[in-house]
Image (cartoon, rainbow, N blue to C red; front, side, top):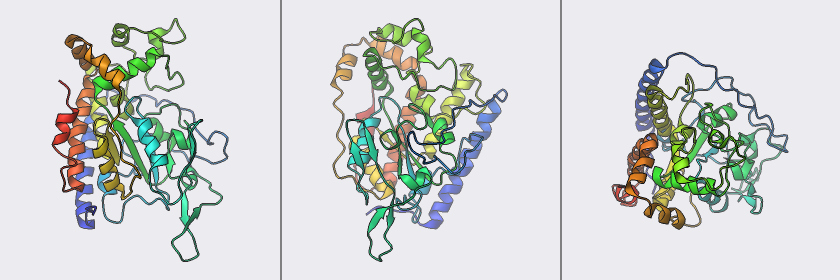
Length: 379
């Protein structure tokens, strides 16, 4: 049985979390030198070919902590868990090469929901309609009619369900701005060890991937600057990939989880510290994150957090190409990759600790706990 906190315990935990976040915010903003104009990302009014609006209104400001975002501490409180028949919305933050696609497939194919998603696998698009309880008196579900906002239309905001409506691989800041105004957003994401993730992205880019349409908050965070005299970076060498300072693959997980308000993009150590601290703060607030190296434990944590079940077990990825590539690398090259991805390494180590803590809150078994360290660590 899932352990749920009683309301009094929940209130204490939420108050404590709020106080901690307040101190972090004061620290972060005290380090910022001066305000900078926020990046004006395109406002999404319609879902591609649909008349459905993202939200009833759009916020003009970006917040580090949004009152519409449901945190893990809040989600596990009795009476406050995810409700698929209400306006609660799962929002998937898909960080490249972290196992996000496999997780999203589980969400649209395996999650036990009242009305299953209908998918066109060829186009990677799924209809995941928001169910409502029938008025017949029996606990039967039907699709919500005449949806007006995204929350009326679906219970999941992800690439498979709504396409890249908020931009190609949007980061957390972009998603929050795009979806502002929607009630009770439950953010989901996956993290991966920085060495594995970096090499996996390198191999993907070498095969021709570019993500050119993806937006960046800083001009120097633009991988296209690494190959500005060419249309793509196919067949790039590992040395070139490592040594281009504009490569978004470097510390990508930190960059996509961070907040960019009052951020000057000067790549100073002070600003890097702010970036990392905000990513850690935001990770604290995310309802669920999984660890790529811990698929079964991640499945258990998701199911216990939201009182939902998957039909089939998560399987550990067989990314044998990446593993074989890393095995052939000299130690000094591995050390160099971890050095330039130092923010991601700190974030990942923090995430592993937080993941184990969350697991131990929701289970009495050894399915989550200290064993994760041995399986996730890299020398």
